[in-house]
Length: 175
Image 1 (cartoon, rainbow, N blue to C red):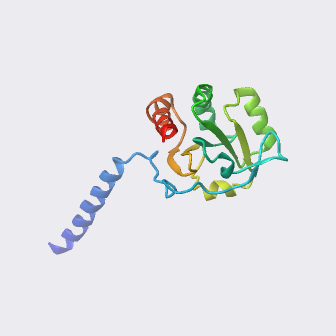
Image 2: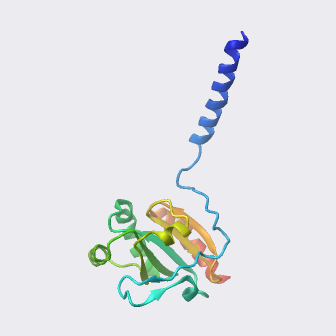
Image 3: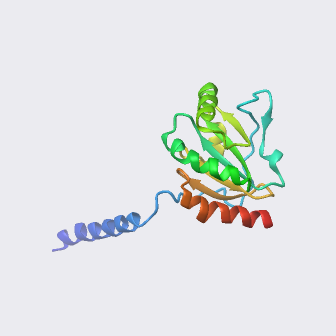
C-alpha cells in the first residue's frame, strides 16, 4: 500500500503546481528593475549615429522605452498603437532598436511611421540585457526621477494603452 501512496502524493503535488501555473498570466513577467533607477546606456541614435542618447538626458521627464526590431512580427502588431500614443504627446517615447540592422530599422520606420522621439541602436543587445529584456517587444515606463515604474512584456494593445499606459503616464506627470 505504501509503495502506491508515494507516487500518488507526488502526482497530486505536481497537479497542484500545474493548476497554479495555469492561472498565471505569461505576459506578467516581474522585473527586478521596478522602482529602481533605469539602467544606464549611451547608445547612438538611429537617425544620427554621431549623436548618442542616455537615460540621464531624459531626467525630469516621464518617458517610455520601447524595445523593438524590424524583424519582430509582434512589434508590427503594436506599432499602430504606439503611433496613436505618440500623437497624444503624453510622454517622450524612446525606441531601443534591438539586435537589428540600422538600414532595415530606418526603412521599417519610414514605411510604418515613426512614433519615437528618438530611437537608439543596440546592435549587440548589451543594453537589452541590462534592462532584463526577454524578447521584443517590451516597454518600460520611467518617472521624472529616472526610475522604472512599469514593464510591459509583449505587444501593447489599445486596451493596454487606455487601461495601463495613459493613466500611469498621467499620474507620473502630476508627481
